[in-house]
Each structure stands twice: as C-alpha cells, then as structure tokens.
Image (cartoon, rainbow, N blue to C red; front, side, top):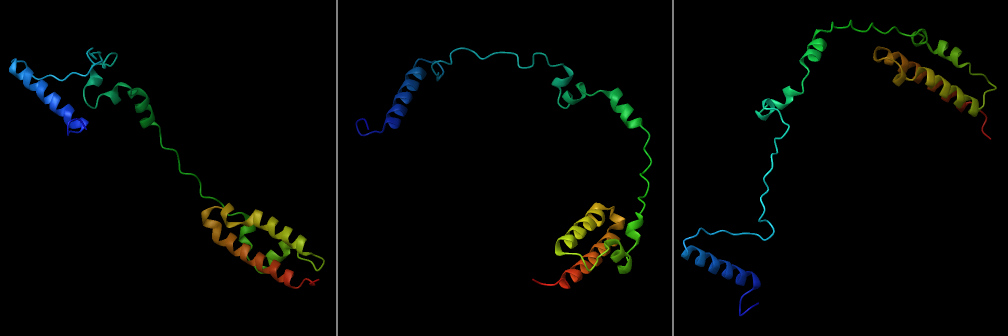
Length: 157
C-alpha cells in the first residue's frame, strides 16, 4: 500500500494521468507494451492455393477425383455364401454326445476335466457361426451334464 492505496490502484491512477496528458496534447491514447514494438507481419497463406483460400475448397484440392470415380465404379461383390452347419453340430441326442465323450468307469476327475475342455474347444457356441449356436449350446449343456454326472459317481476319497 502506497499512501493508502494498493499497488494496483496506484498503477491505475498513473495510467489514467498519462492518458489525460496525451489527450491534452491532442494525440490519441496509445498503450504500448515494451518489447512488442516490432511488427508481427508475415504471410500465413504462403504456399496455399487460391482455390483453397475459399471456404470449403481446401478438401477438394487434395481429392483425387479419378481414384474416387474408380472406387465408385467397382462392381459390387456377391454376398458371401451361407455357412454350412458342421456335421458334429447336427448330433444333439444325448446318446450320440455320450458316445463322442466316451466316458468310462475308469475315468478320473482329471480325465473327465480334460474331456470337458476338449469337447468345449470343438463345440463351444462362441466358436461357431450365429445360425448354429443353438445346436452348439445344446451340445455343451448335454456334455456338461454327462460329465458332471460321471464326476458325482466317482468314489470320494
């Protein structure tokens, strides 16, 4: 605080006094920042074509119309053929799935888990085409039920 004023207030008073003296001299009020006395004049549009200086034209300067026409004229490819259901997905009867799993009385929990993983690798619904997922899901449910039942029958130690 200088003489009851803050520094900011004293700067404002000084600038106001300078403006009044400049106006008294008949000159317009000009505020200059030291170090910015040099001009910042340069051509920002140097190297830009005249067409792209118009709004919306810059894109068209870089567009290859011949290539775009060639892409547009390409004949449409035929749709991909419908997928064919694999033979193993048509077998959804529990007896056929049990035959594929070949569960035996000698199987251990480890061998049953290996059979479950191998069956899931070949039949999981996420690994088949969309139209066949219901069959794959049904096969997985039946196989899991058969393997779970075989595990329940294992002797507990």
